[in-house]
Length: 137
Image 1 (cartoon, rainbow, N blue to C red):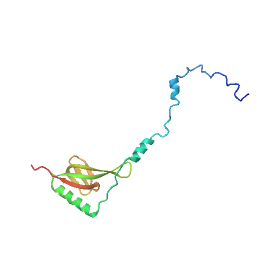
Image 2 (cartoon, helix red, strand yellow; image 1 turned 90 degrees about the vertical axis):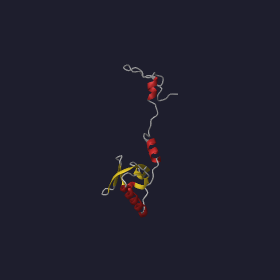
Image 3 (cartoon, helix red, strand yellow; image 1 turned 180 degrees about the vertical axis):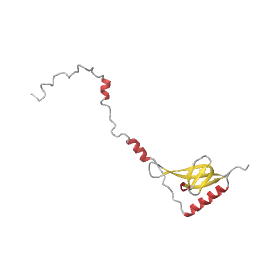
Image 4 (cartoon, helix red, strand yellow; image 1 turned 45 degrees about the vertical axis):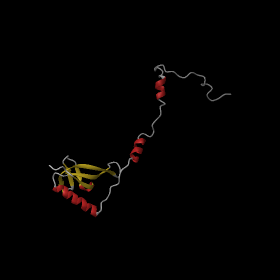
């Protein structure tokens, strides 16, 4: 039988006169697996991360919040526990968390509450205000 490659099938492989042969361990690295889906795991974990939906308050709840804020502002030594909603910067929704502190000031024009710690919270993000009891001096 004769085939199209009979003239070269039994020849030795070519060896370069300029370069040494590559080590087997380095040659094997050429055939290492290729990660075609770089970042796929990050996308999956981000998509599966849980976020809360913002709660819209009705008129009665807003009136109650305003009353509690007014009560907290009338006593400069009172501590409050604010339940706030922080929007997630990467996807729709966010997280509800509690912040405890003393109200330093409230800007009625911008609707921003500043705590003694320096934290500024927009009033529109507040979902509940709990006035904490302070020890009598």
